[in-house]
Length: 296
Image 1 (cartoon, rainbow, N blue to C red):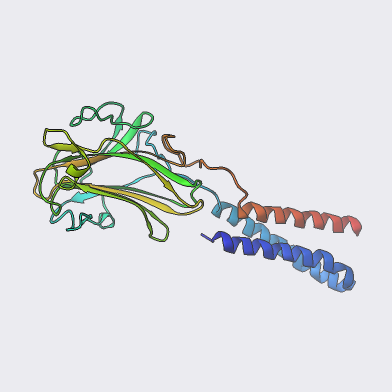
Image 2 (spheres, helix red, strand yellow):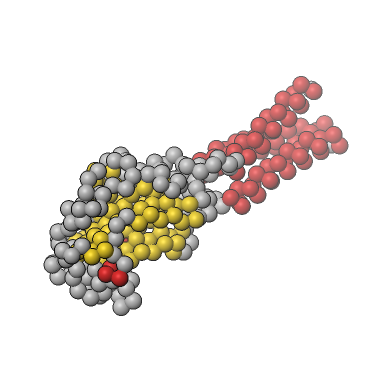
């Protein structure tokens, strides 16, 4: 996609062509004017084609099915597999790379409806609306589940969402059930990173006194630049030995805090886009053409 700066420079160039054509015709010969008219006709066609492309490129967007209210995974990418080896690092980060899971062979998640969690009876399974997603489940299937979505030309100045994790007490920070939730921009800068295993959870999660820990719902609001590209990725994995499980609920991705999630239509204030400005230039060209025909 062309950057806004490049698009703006193209539009400025087009306006320059209009000015040169309109104000220059009074000081050139009739033959030169005829030649200029031919060039201008070609220029108008070129700008028309360019404008059509720019309008599509500049279309603002938001998360598709950000709150899973379609009762489906529409708009999201699911991948999964089987865990083996360490799940965490000595610093508590993920040892599992979400990008390394490219197929969906062991999905244990589900779209949830309103109700309460089977392990934490006080935890609502939906934060907003009628549905959320649960990534992984409470049974150890040696599973790794990943869900992700990328949005370009984001139509908002904040990314808002909620998550809740339930982790079964297991081993060390190297080999416990674990999850990692990350938001990055188009340049790879990490805007948000929440990584917890059942070994690190006791410091911050609620002990359910049944061998499990629960985070409760966590509401997140990230300030971001409008028009950027952003990717959300959530990985949840069991421990590698077939004995302990962990899962995470996710809900409400959108431009409005507490709004329950967007559905691809955009939620921010409407501002003029470079593609629209190009169409304005095209309209001015048409007006000047009409004036010249009447003068003839």
